[in-house]
Length: 234
Image (tube, rainbow, N blue to C red):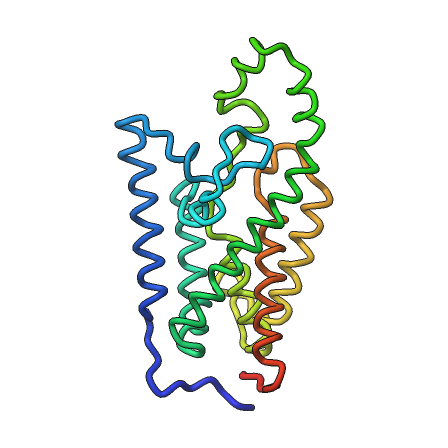
């Protein structure tokens, strides 16, 4: 089979490097500056549903650079480097940048649509409350409409989908032990995310629909770009 052998493979290509730096800087700001100066960065930069008084248009982009804890950012950045570096080396910086942000925006849009319908009964109840009660809730982090969504997972799932399409037979290792071909890994993750979306278990605060949205956009883009060139790599 044809293997992917670019003439100048970079372990840390420029767009990936810059994305890692920006995400880490945001996380440091969340962990230090936000705590010390009470700036409420999640309120302003994490993604909120359209019905929330905290929603701002720029959150559709900025939420991709924020993370909940060290484990969240570590696994997202590791996956971004692992799959995104291969894609950037294959496509170049410009195309990968377009791809990454398109996946992130697609994930955000899918999540916003899902949350709009999910929270519509709460939004209707909120409108019926007296103004004094609305005022108490409108700026509360505990108010359901003010729940925030953050993380690069949607864009990263897009990278995973593209990698699985272009390198379907490459072996990935679950827990560093169990070998699984990329195409089965992608399908397995997609099936799991769909199941968890439908299950909607209590206490599950993961934006599974955003993951699926990013993966769908990523697959659609790479399929469209590869439409006239059906080349697959190992």
